[in-house]
Amino acid sequence: MKILCIFLTFVFTVSCGPSVPQKKTREIAERKRECQLVRGACKPECNSWEYVYYYCDVNPCCVVREYQKPIINKIITTLHQK
Image 1 (cartoon, rainbow, N blue to C red):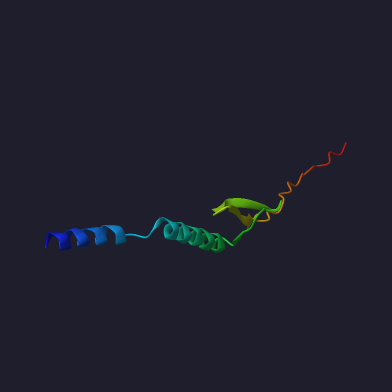
Image 2 (tube, one colour):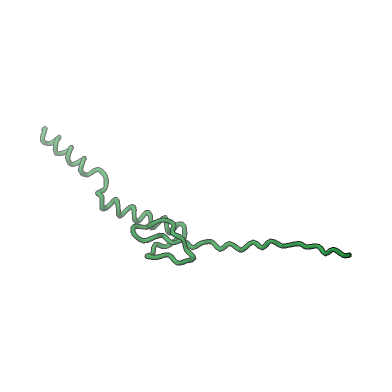
């Protein structure tokens, strides 16, 4: 009976939770999914119009910068008549 209890204790402690490689694979998949949610792509290098959101495994998650229209301040001048 003691042997059975020891065996069951060993089986439950070893089988609880994913192994380290499975956990890392799952984390990489989650990071890639998050990158896709922000409309990014995991690739070896980002272009100049992209920024690094975070890293998917080894490669960065590149997200396109939003284009912001330049603000033009209008200069209003008044003519002084003499």
